[in-house]
Length: 155
Ligand SMILES: [Zn+2]
Image 1 (cartoon, helix red, strand yellow):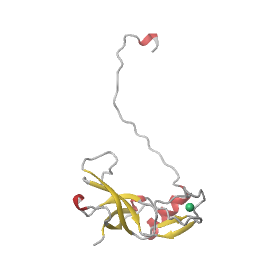
Image 2: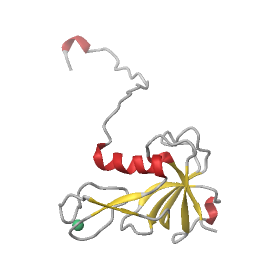
Image 3: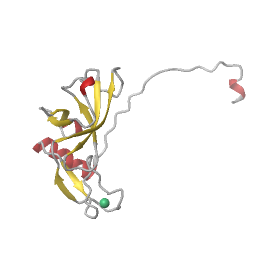
């Protein structure tokens, strides 16, 4: 510490900063988001070497290191492979979501990996691993992951 600060009590100021930012989603995510927005269709890239289908989309297969240039349709239905319930309002929870919020890892039929998204229209105590769920698309879509509003149980 510099001589000029000797004897001065260190002060802490608590505050928040706003850091607005924008970035290009990239060609892989853009293709996925445009399909959600314009066609309400969930598409995913597939590795041309090992055949794995990635949801969420990945540009490069992490096992083969090849670019995933094939795209396939995946189902809007899938299976809950894990989930978590937040009963507190966390900063990560969008303002339009009511607590409790349920996050689920959902493996869509036709995909080899699981997508993190919201589960809704279900009591948190009724969610189970292995539960079958279906995507509910947002009425107003803007080209983002929340063009899928949430996943609900398949009746
Ligand atoms: Zn591969």
